[in-house]
Image 1: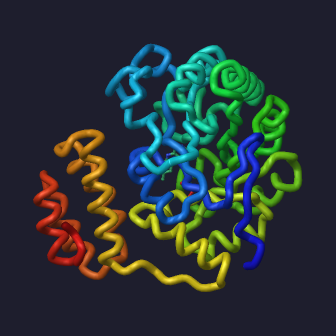
Image 2: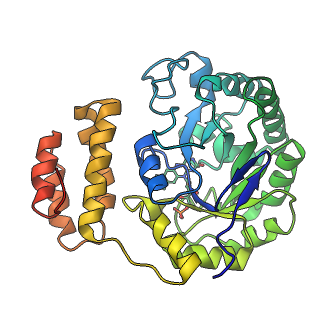
Image 3: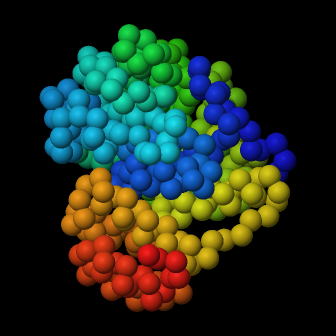
Length: 341
Ligand SMILES: Cc1cc2nc3c(=O)[nH]c(=O)nc-3n(C[C@H](O)[C@H](O)[C@H](O)COP(=O)(O)O)c2cc1C
């Protein structure tokens, strides 16, 4: 494993290590990102944010205005010294304007979503649909790079893509080449097609192939569920960084475990009580951002992840889905986990 945990250079930004948290809509909120950083994540990214919504002077999810530095979707986490904001859109001019509006948040990186398979996004030509239109992708990268030079202190611009639209149109090579020519400083590759969604296996040979073809670092994504998976991806593909997505949900400890695996060749799974205590901390801090009632409801799905694989997890989930207050969560979790206050 030795030598697999190493720094990553993204344009002008040098990261101390190569364990990234992937953007995961509905899960990787700023509190969760901070919990991952506490466990050793080297880089984090917001979930995808609509450029159209930003520019139309609304928050990405209609919660507040784009200039509002309290917008929890765009804001960095309390311990997030470096982060990326991910934008999606299909119009270079709108993406340019949206990137400019990120100035109050000072992101270290702006990432462009080229992989989202959700119809609401792809029908507008954005997300993975951009891979069907590489010329537009190139213009979008150019536009965001320009906006970054003008208003974001030249923060590097990166692109996160899939292998292609479907098995008959695998075109990550072309899309990545065009993105890099337009100024992208790193390409993340989720090695599935849009048609695959999140099913089936990701094809890591695409990641290895891309590594050999472009001059900027490649971050690999797809099927990283354990420290061993991360070690294998780094070893087999030569990618510069690995991005945990579903494997980190309810399990920020995957970062410390992976770091330990890569540096020492061993790792310990977290105790059940540690996972639940972390989930409870997530709830309390999330409530401070979006209010107790909304956080308690939103955290139900997060607790499905925090209790996954735990003994008695199903019974715990059945009770937690009825919890409407922090106090109710506390009472239920205290029965299982010591250390919840
Ligand atoms: C619920 C969910 C939400 C996601 N949201 C985003 C997103 O906002 N932006 C993005 O680029 N990728 C998003 N992804 C894709 C992940 O970042 C990652 O590339 C993908 O899940 C593959 O990794 P995995 O197989 O290890 O989960 C999402 C994935 C899931 C499951």
